[in-house]
Length: 183
Image (cartoon, rainbow, N blue to C red; front, side, top):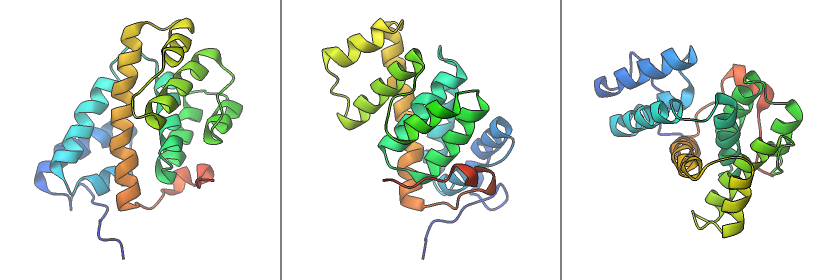
């Protein structure tokens, strides 16, 4: 039996409701992972603050989704892979590139490949990037500050990926077409 309820705005602890409202506004719906996180006002509040920074940074939304999808795959988080696959496709990322990331490969778009490769290296090596990892990213047209900004996106994804692994929220019907299992 899962001991982690998926809260609604009405059932969530009072201290979590403002954060849930912000996420509901951002997505047009309240993702189940947010409802699960709401049991901890500290967790959901931290995610919302970091979420705001990630989505107001220098990366475009499609670039952010490449990193978030890569992280979800690297962290073997089925809920997050389905969610970010859906969002990546909505952002106009080529279906073949989404599928490549879901299968642990680099997407065909050179900038997306650089982002995906860097994000995967960060997770797999726990931040211990090689000079080659960093140079490959920078040679794709990114600046050193972008590399540090990717750390922020990876941190945000760790919150959702780890929480999804622990709480196992049900996958919403709107993400079922992108359901995924670690292979």
